[in-house]
Image (tube, rainbow, N blue to C red; front, side):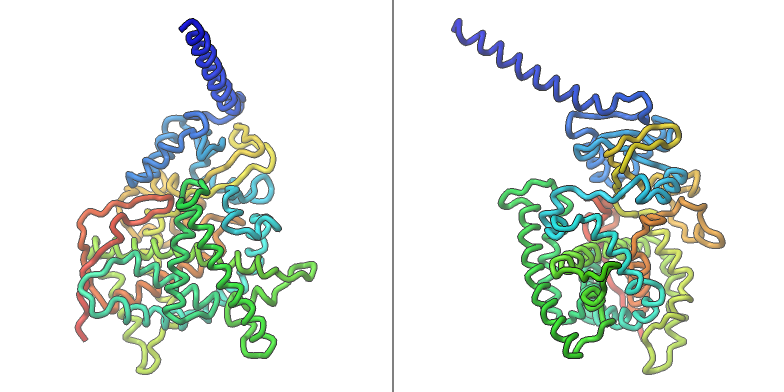
Length: 479
């Protein structure tokens, strides 16, 4: 007993001493007098749990707006996902960030992403993203999108005929994922076989779940399953790439038929071509993003159309006016038809205002100042669309669904930013908008519908998704 107490004393002392060092080290990062106001939160975790909890409750904007009010500032410090961070809010913060990309900020991705996208070990994920931005405009720019309208409409028509027609009740979110992923497979890889697309989609579900999970790589964890699924997808893509190279050499494939051909033939300023691993990982990343964000937006479009009959009627009237101008045998949409979808486009904008994607993250290349506050080198920098999208200063009655906000000159600059801005603008935003318009056109011309679940919560994990997937009853229009 005499030996036990001294040993217990020393054990408690060393544990206490060790914890105090951790806490001191954690808080010391936040002590500089020029840092923004804010809280470091718990050691390591910081304020991560509160951010995740508000997202789970369906109100992630509360985390940001509460702190804007508390600190009376458009920038505050915090600690998220074990990283010291500055969160920029408001139009002035958006303008600063969008103009400083590659000057004081760079893209940032967590280390575990290298396990899902191993080509980033050979060439940084940031370098690959930068190269992708130079490749995509030719394939996803306005001139290219004009050529895709008929293809998009054909794919949408087949999707609704096989998955929606002759059904009384459907769950929208998984069907929207099927549509957007199938369209991405067609446009990126020229894959149209439903069984092949379904096989890839099941693997991509695992990849996306792993990306948005706790980064623990142990057997059975979401990250571990994502790594295995990405390896399986990569094996499939290597076979597709090998066959496409052969087809291009023999003239059986067109250099412009899809983004795969484009990547195989494009070289950088030094004349170097992308490696097969880089191409496979780039296609994988593009398909993963097509698999989740646009499909969620399509589901929310249906949600709001079902909840607001006057909005549905406005969209239906506009889309039927377009359909009635089509001659027999020429029913597919064209670019001129898309330009006539002004009200529908504003409905999509209002959906994106209320349901933007998760906050984007950058890293400070070197220390800089904003509004007199120091942002240290290496700190993570978040911008959050909800800080302006749901701010009554920019959007009166922000919780009210009102497409007329976007009529005339629309919102003030840097207040409506669902796809970012400047060099941070999502390169696929035009592709996504076109998908949503054509999805909406094919939906309303076939059906009227109402919600099967009256009150459905929007969850954020970390992107906004409908808790039940938006189940609806379908009422086909009579001929």
